[in-house]
Image: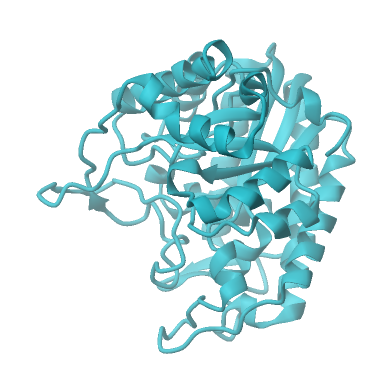
Length: 379
């Protein structure tokens, strides 16, 4: 863990996973800073269209690697087009909103972007194959993403000089990349598994380049899919891991214990977001969140561009019950209860893009209360 990792976030902090409802960047940034003041983040707004969703934002960051939106998703192309210009414009609006709302802010601040392996699993090569199928393309994507993130961190540091920046790589497809479960564009076959050593090497280089920046206090990976490759992430040198604690099995206890003992901190998904209601109507602008390994090809790239079912109201339990999974995990691992609030920040289990603004605010407030329980009454 880096020397700055101990000050990545204050005890009892809560933060978001990434996406929020709506299309107003300034409103979304203000909501985050109001409700998650200990560890605010730069939100994604997929309702603005594909350019505002997770792959579209990453496309806007890539340096000298233009992409364009095709019917099947995002594809690498020789020169920038209208779709990429729109993605970059949306990102610039997000940064302008951040400056407007938080120019005088001082404290921990998180940015999130699609990681290199999920990006390679989503992007297509010019000839139509998945970028993941080409080792050279995966290297180029990682390099272009590193260069783009360096520029973004430096730009945010200029806009918000008091920000201590954490960089989160969103890798929902990483378990599928390692297991050989990423489907080809046709959907009739799967790509071979990527060797774990190569995954670790690319992540280590990317994370190391970002950690070296003066404004960066922590770098990590978030994965909302089952079977998070914790040993690989520890080998890659992450400072923190974000995961859905409610989906962990007891068989994963040892892996969690090993990363905590190695000094890695956790962003624990504990507060549920709402399940899809079978009888819900279709919203013409309702965005989708990050895709998992079973999602159809290009689904993440089209997130926000197509409608989806409106989500049923979240069922939030008593705050003590919300944090019970991580408290029980901590007991099984034999760690001191007073460490829990220092090591763990509370998050929702998934993005909040499918909620209404009031419901998103309710989930954020529940996260804050849950974070305080880990400090005030962790046993």
